[in-house]
Amino acid sequence: MNIYDKWNDKLKSDDAAQFYNTYLEQETEAYKAILAEKDKHLKGTVAELAEKFGMEDWVFAGFMDGINTSLKKNVNLDTLNNDTALNCEIDFEKLYYNMHNAKAKWLYSLDEWEDILSKEERERIRKQYVADHTAVRDKVGRNEPCPCGSGKKYKKCCGK
Image 1 (spheres, rainbow, N blue to C red):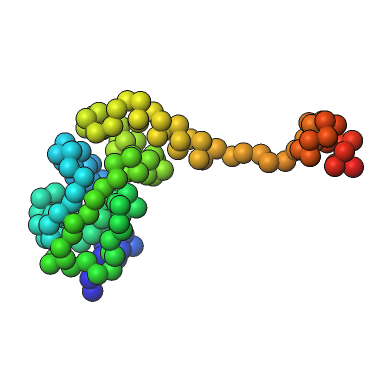
Image 2 (cartoon, one colour):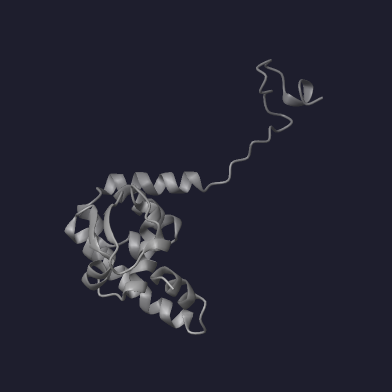
């Protein structure tokens, strides 16, 4: 069993909720450390990085699962083991957006973001997230101008 499978098994276990609360604290501390360093690169073996962030190797595999979509190049999680050498580049804008997408306010509201992205950049990303997740109605109303450009109301033109 690889370390990523161990992570998935833990999430299916009876004590998953209790474990997950502990994990969220570890995850928050890891992101604080990454943002405080202002280094876009996660470099080292899985064992070294897990130790750096105070996690067990399989817990770090779960962390990698969460950050994977925010990396410039995704990591194949199924091949992770203690000796796997990682050299990952984090896209901080994508990470901030993905934290909004995960509704992880405790992560996207960290003070450490202030040194990474300006307030304007963070606001732009937040607005983009809101725009991307706002339902847009494409249906033309009966009394609206016809989209064909005739100048008539839709109900008197193409909507007949």
